[in-house]
Length: 138
Image 1 (tube, one colour):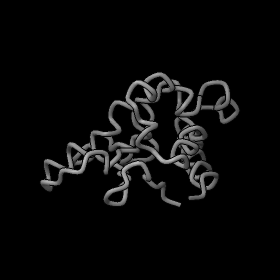
Image 2 (cartoon, one colour):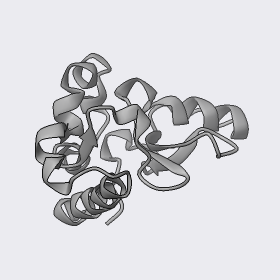
Image 3 (cartoon, one colour):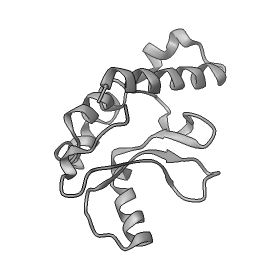
């Protein structure tokens, strides 16, 4: 996985949305943190590091989120990087829909906004039998 490329794409989409909302691009550094900085405590409490690959954790250490993260959409249908407590929500939803029972195989990274027909935006799927190697798209 190309962590730098994934983070750069996320941060550019975030920057464009930030400016589109009338914010000053120069304020991103002072009014935004990385996802990992913002959710460090919750991330550890949810035991997420044991599920994610090192590359995905590195991505979350670089991807920016605003201070009011739950009010900022990354783009029209996708809200943005989710709170750590929702990351495993995809597993529950998919297991219900498709009768699958593979804990930690599906990880919700980006959620849909209120216009979506379901709460899932971008779901990462680990290979069967290797839940600790969830990839990031490159």
